Image (cartoon, rainbow, N blue to C red; front, side, top):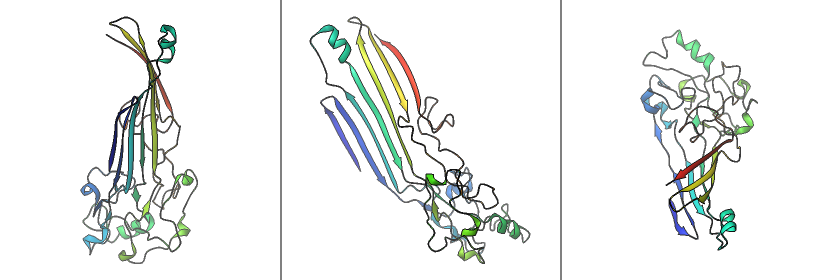
Length: 255
């Protein structure tokens, strides 16, 4: 669904919402996984290739995005007053998505089965997964940051392949909004100077990756990393200075 506002009192913008459900047996065919920490790249059940059929690693049920540009309709016939209050523009983006799915892995059981040729390099089982226990939440948010939201005591060791579930859990959602503020100054008939500032993650809202999902890790059940922002001064999805508010000031001359 998309809604668009054409120019109205200097304001224009667009709002988009997408509901979707992506499913597969193995995301990206096991090549270049969406998240190398979360992807299950081999079969769940060596006797049933379809046992891994579930939501994809990149399955996003809900996604919202919006962008706007507002040329403030403030003007004055007085030259100096117009220089102060006129020529202002606000622009920005909003982005929200629900969390990505992930699988909780019984690494110890996987290692035990490796001696039976159920290896990650073969055509058989790569990982043994926990099935959700009754009453346990299946969605984990920012409260898991550096605090274990689940431990090995939350699960029972699976006794057969059919008890396993791929991508049965979901991590935290993502929200971000950027803001641009700029002011134009008409220097001469030909030259115009613009002074502005870009605020990336203007609300300084923290966003997190999925919790550590392998029980062999000492950080099992904890979120230990920030999510990479889609927009930064360093480029799209540049894994640098992610998660924090960044301010960029600029000036330019148009002629």
